[in-house]
Image (cartoon, rainbow, N blue to C red; front, side, top):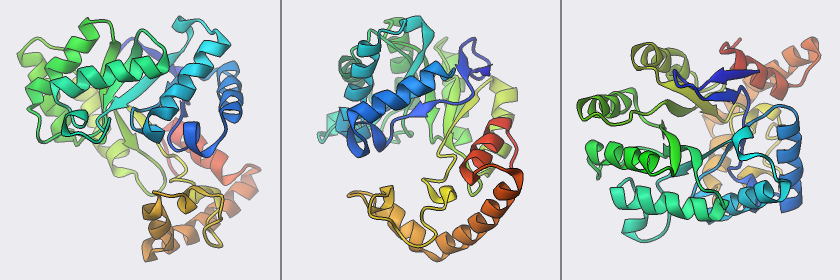
Length: 280
């Protein structure tokens, strides 16, 4: 099943394959290729990455797989995100310089002429909104991207970007990438529908399994091979072991009982309800 991305004409599969933590880091390149092939051959046409994922290695892995498989470029959608590109001050943020140079770097790693959608991977208070929108319009006009969107922006920030685009005859964002799962619902269910009807901004959601919590893998602690045990993910371990985390794990046990009665896994139930836009 495919849908339009916001009110744009871009058709994307209801499910996409992300590369955060996994590609270029947690899994082998062979496994990454197997996962991507399985997804593509079963109708998934959207693959998401970012310049910051595994310090650029996720984009390299994704690009190598695309080149090896030889799929028609017109048959799939690649999205990447720009914000954290390196250690230097000029390699971070949403200045015109970093948006353009960061996207060029992503294209080199991906071995692509363009991405279908480039996200601003959080707002940058140090960069004027007009500069951000003009830079995004520039990379689209230069053929480096087809569309642009926002990731983890507030509704007010998205409206400001839209207003700037309309004021100066620039290109507005087409979608917001937002976290959405059983424990994070307000933005996608309350705020984004209003933006969609007002200005046509769609939603691309991430983390439907709440960083793995919904699978039940953390019910008896943090497994050594899990994401929460990885270097750099202490924040996730702390979240799992927090009081709020324990409350969530208790609710997840109830969710697993419901999934058993329905004859599916809790992960399948969670992803299924996300794609239908409703949560039990």
